[in-house]
Image (cartoon, rainbow, N blue to C red; front, side):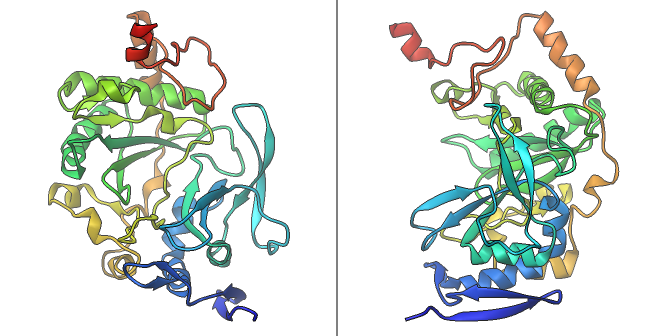
Length: 336
């Protein structure tokens, strides 16, 4: 028997949606159709934050409790309004990656069982040079969102000293993502070094609350600055992207005032964010208006190099990088 199929009008395009009543979030009963309605409702700010750039699609064959896989290049038969761009990866390999430029393309991604959208920090017109500096404030065991929220204002001060303005979003889970718009004048490795420089400065000011230690056994109950999220082809859930969590939370832009007032990230879900947008608008509407430069952070990076602080470990799937320390966790290195 053929699956049920409906057609949705999206900006004048007729988007097809199969199995619209399939439940994606079992605990809440949120269906594929409801997810499509959500992405249509948030399409304008979603595209402002995630459109016109490479994006990886986190797709689910059934519910968010089941198996997932990542899709990068458009599958055969994708409609002509789903675009692609050729990207170069750290291995030197190249292949096309999905680019979403309009609301109907987001609905197509939902039709392909996408739940989480992972955009690159660079645009399709120049995939090698990021337009955002991204810092992931990642709570470690024993810490939570409130601990990340206490750290974020100090990070804002650090970034302002470096000539950058910081914008916030919830991760959709326990963390906070801090974004700074930047001019696309440096490639990913430079931007990663800028993130490390900012993180090291933050850790100096808050040594008991912040860590730059890559190895989990060394982090303790502190907020980890996940500097490797700044690497090429390393992404985080985009603004207004749902998360594959039982509560259907959404990675949601917030203002600094909201953070200070004790915002609850669990309140932002597929069912509540459209009304939030209707009431207060998009806190990130002006994010890209005044991009900064990372020159000061790169000067701090060089200062730290001169002081003996070197490169930090890369993720295991990356090739060995110049100046990188051994990829061996400290406790194992001691045994060896």
